[in-house]
Length: 195
Image (cartoon, rainbow, N blue to C red; front, side, top):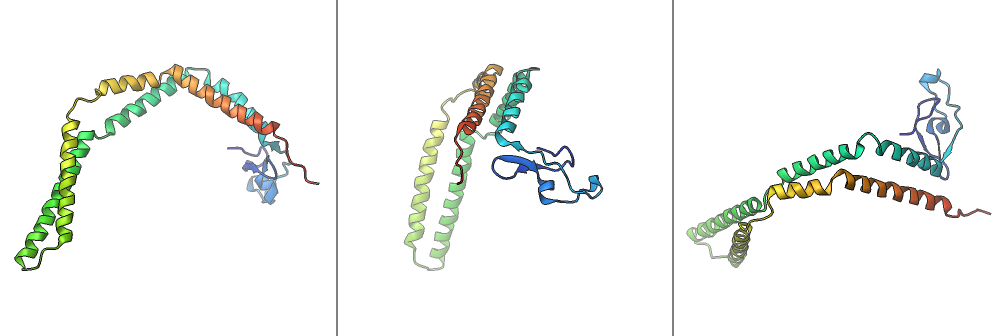
Protein backbone atom coordinates (compact mmCIF):
# COMPACT_ATOMS: atom_id res chain seq x y z
CA UNK A 1 0.00 0.00 0.00
CA UNK A 2 3.02 2.27 0.33
CA UNK A 3 4.06 4.13 -2.81
CA UNK A 4 7.08 6.18 -3.72
CA UNK A 5 6.25 9.87 -4.11
CA UNK A 6 8.66 10.23 -7.05
CA UNK A 7 8.03 7.16 -9.23
CA UNK A 8 4.86 5.60 -7.77
CA UNK A 9 6.69 2.33 -7.16
CA UNK A 10 6.16 0.20 -4.08
CA UNK A 11 7.91 0.88 -0.80
CA UNK A 12 9.01 -2.31 0.95
CA UNK A 13 11.29 -3.43 3.77
CA UNK A 14 14.91 -2.96 2.79
CA UNK A 15 17.62 -3.58 5.28
CA UNK A 16 16.73 -3.85 8.94
CA UNK A 17 13.30 -2.43 9.73
CA UNK A 18 13.35 0.33 7.10
CA UNK A 19 11.06 0.93 4.14
CA UNK A 20 12.42 2.34 0.89
CA UNK A 21 11.51 2.54 -2.80
CA UNK A 22 12.08 -0.84 -4.44
CA UNK A 23 12.46 0.74 -7.89
CA UNK A 24 15.38 2.86 -6.64
CA UNK A 25 16.98 -0.12 -4.92
CA UNK A 26 16.71 -2.25 -8.09
CA UNK A 27 17.75 0.73 -10.26
CA UNK A 28 14.87 0.07 -12.62
CA UNK A 29 14.25 2.55 -15.47
CA UNK A 30 10.83 4.16 -14.95
CA UNK A 31 8.68 4.98 -17.98
CA UNK A 32 6.97 7.88 -16.17
CA UNK A 33 10.41 9.38 -15.44
CA UNK A 34 11.47 9.25 -19.10
CA UNK A 35 13.44 6.04 -18.61
CA UNK A 36 15.46 7.42 -15.70
CA UNK A 37 15.88 5.55 -12.44
CA UNK A 38 14.10 6.70 -9.30
CA UNK A 39 16.31 8.96 -7.18
CA UNK A 40 14.12 8.94 -4.04
CA UNK A 41 16.51 7.96 -1.27
CA UNK A 42 14.05 8.66 1.56
CA UNK A 43 13.49 5.77 3.92
CA UNK A 44 11.28 5.35 6.96
CA UNK A 45 11.62 3.11 10.00
CA UNK A 46 8.98 0.43 10.34
CA UNK A 47 8.15 1.60 13.86
CA UNK A 48 7.70 5.22 12.71
CA UNK A 49 5.43 4.10 9.88
CA UNK A 50 3.32 1.94 12.22
CA UNK A 51 3.04 4.85 14.66
CA UNK A 52 1.80 7.18 11.89
CA UNK A 53 -0.83 4.64 10.83
CA UNK A 54 -1.97 4.05 14.39
CA UNK A 55 -2.24 7.80 14.96
CA UNK A 56 -4.61 8.05 11.96
CA UNK A 57 -6.77 5.03 12.82
CA UNK A 58 -8.69 6.51 15.77
CA UNK A 59 -9.69 9.59 13.79
CA UNK A 60 -11.00 7.43 10.97
CA UNK A 61 -12.81 4.93 13.18
CA UNK A 62 -14.22 7.15 15.90
CA UNK A 63 -16.15 9.46 13.61
CA UNK A 64 -19.04 9.48 11.14
CA UNK A 65 -21.00 6.60 12.68
CA UNK A 66 -18.36 4.04 11.75
CA UNK A 67 -19.24 1.65 14.57
CA UNK A 68 -22.90 1.69 13.61
CA UNK A 69 -22.02 0.94 9.96
CA UNK A 70 -19.67 -1.89 10.93
CA UNK A 71 -22.29 -3.24 13.34
CA UNK A 72 -24.99 -3.30 10.64
CA UNK A 73 -22.68 -5.11 8.20
CA UNK A 74 -21.61 -7.68 10.79
CA UNK A 75 -25.20 -8.37 11.83
CA UNK A 76 -26.36 -8.82 8.23
CA UNK A 77 -23.39 -11.13 7.54
CA UNK A 78 -24.11 -13.29 10.60
CA UNK A 79 -27.87 -13.46 9.86
CA UNK A 80 -27.12 -14.52 6.27
CA UNK A 81 -24.79 -17.20 7.64
CA UNK A 82 -27.53 -18.43 10.00
CA UNK A 83 -30.03 -18.63 7.14
CA UNK A 84 -27.63 -20.61 4.96
CA UNK A 85 -26.70 -23.12 7.65
CA UNK A 86 -28.67 -26.33 7.18
CA UNK A 87 -30.62 -27.43 10.19
CA UNK A 88 -29.21 -30.24 12.27
CA UNK A 89 -32.30 -32.31 11.54
CA UNK A 90 -31.94 -31.89 7.77
CA UNK A 91 -28.28 -32.93 7.93
CA UNK A 92 -29.14 -36.02 10.00
CA UNK A 93 -31.95 -36.95 7.61
CA UNK A 94 -29.61 -36.70 4.62
CA UNK A 95 -26.98 -38.82 6.37
CA UNK A 96 -29.61 -41.42 7.33
CA UNK A 97 -30.83 -41.59 3.74
CA UNK A 98 -27.25 -42.16 2.51
CA UNK A 99 -26.64 -44.94 5.05
CA UNK A 100 -29.91 -46.66 4.13
CA UNK A 101 -28.96 -46.48 0.43
CA UNK A 102 -25.58 -48.09 1.18
CA UNK A 103 -27.39 -50.80 3.13
CA UNK A 104 -29.67 -51.51 0.15
CA UNK A 105 -26.67 -51.69 -2.19
CA UNK A 106 -24.84 -54.05 0.14
CA UNK A 107 -27.91 -56.28 0.55
CA UNK A 108 -28.20 -56.36 -3.26
CA UNK A 109 -24.55 -57.45 -3.53
CA UNK A 110 -25.09 -60.21 -0.98
CA UNK A 111 -28.25 -61.37 -2.84
CA UNK A 112 -26.43 -61.32 -6.20
CA UNK A 113 -23.59 -63.42 -4.77
CA UNK A 114 -26.09 -65.92 -3.35
CA UNK A 115 -27.93 -66.13 -6.70
CA UNK A 116 -24.62 -66.82 -8.46
CA UNK A 117 -23.84 -69.59 -5.97
CA UNK A 118 -20.89 -67.73 -4.46
CA UNK A 119 -20.18 -68.19 -0.75
CA UNK A 120 -21.09 -65.44 1.69
CA UNK A 121 -18.26 -63.09 2.58
CA UNK A 122 -17.91 -62.29 6.27
CA UNK A 123 -16.56 -58.83 5.37
CA UNK A 124 -19.87 -57.94 3.66
CA UNK A 125 -21.83 -59.15 6.68
CA UNK A 126 -19.58 -57.14 9.02
CA UNK A 127 -20.00 -54.03 6.89
CA UNK A 128 -23.77 -54.50 6.89
CA UNK A 129 -23.71 -54.78 10.70
CA UNK A 130 -21.66 -51.55 10.95
CA UNK A 131 -24.12 -49.74 8.69
CA UNK A 132 -27.05 -50.95 10.79
CA UNK A 133 -25.36 -49.67 13.98
CA UNK A 134 -24.77 -46.30 12.28
CA UNK A 135 -28.39 -46.20 11.07
CA UNK A 136 -29.68 -46.93 14.58
CA UNK A 137 -27.57 -44.08 16.04
CA UNK A 138 -28.82 -41.67 13.39
CA UNK A 139 -32.44 -42.62 14.13
CA UNK A 140 -31.76 -41.96 17.82
CA UNK A 141 -30.14 -38.58 17.04
CA UNK A 142 -33.08 -37.66 14.82
CA UNK A 143 -35.48 -38.36 17.68
CA UNK A 144 -33.46 -35.90 19.80
CA UNK A 145 -33.37 -33.37 16.96
CA UNK A 146 -37.15 -33.11 17.12
CA UNK A 147 -36.78 -31.48 20.53
CA UNK A 148 -37.39 -27.74 20.24
CA UNK A 149 -34.10 -25.91 19.82
CA UNK A 150 -33.35 -22.23 20.00
CA UNK A 151 -35.78 -20.21 17.91
CA UNK A 152 -34.34 -18.47 14.82
CA UNK A 153 -35.55 -15.10 16.13
CA UNK A 154 -33.72 -15.76 19.42
CA UNK A 155 -30.52 -16.43 17.45
CA UNK A 156 -30.96 -13.16 15.56
CA UNK A 157 -31.52 -11.30 18.83
CA UNK A 158 -28.28 -12.78 20.22
CA UNK A 159 -26.37 -11.76 17.06
CA UNK A 160 -27.73 -8.20 17.33
CA UNK A 161 -26.75 -8.02 21.00
CA UNK A 162 -23.28 -9.37 20.30
CA UNK A 163 -22.51 -7.05 17.37
CA UNK A 164 -24.06 -3.82 18.63
CA UNK A 165 -22.12 -0.58 17.94
CA UNK A 166 -20.83 -0.34 21.53
CA UNK A 167 -19.32 -3.85 21.39
CA UNK A 168 -17.82 -3.14 17.96
CA UNK A 169 -16.21 0.03 19.34
CA UNK A 170 -14.77 -1.87 22.30
CA UNK A 171 -13.34 -4.53 19.98
CA UNK A 172 -11.73 -1.96 17.70
CA UNK A 173 -10.32 0.01 20.64
CA UNK A 174 -8.77 -3.20 22.01
CA UNK A 175 -7.27 -3.98 18.62
CA UNK A 176 -5.75 -0.50 18.34
CA UNK A 177 -4.44 -0.70 21.91
CA UNK A 178 -2.79 -4.08 21.21
CA UNK A 179 -1.29 -2.83 17.96
CA UNK A 180 0.05 0.30 19.66
CA UNK A 181 1.36 -1.74 22.61
CA UNK A 182 3.15 -4.17 20.26
CA UNK A 183 4.61 -1.24 18.33
CA UNK A 184 5.87 0.39 21.54
CA UNK A 185 7.28 -2.93 22.78
CA UNK A 186 9.12 -3.46 19.49
CA UNK A 187 10.65 0.03 19.67
CA UNK A 188 11.76 -0.34 23.28
CA UNK A 189 13.43 -3.70 22.65
CA UNK A 190 17.22 -3.28 22.65
CA UNK A 191 18.83 -4.04 19.31
CA UNK A 192 21.93 -6.15 19.05
CA UNK A 193 25.01 -4.31 17.96
CA UNK A 194 27.51 -6.08 15.73
CA UNK A 195 31.13 -5.50 16.72
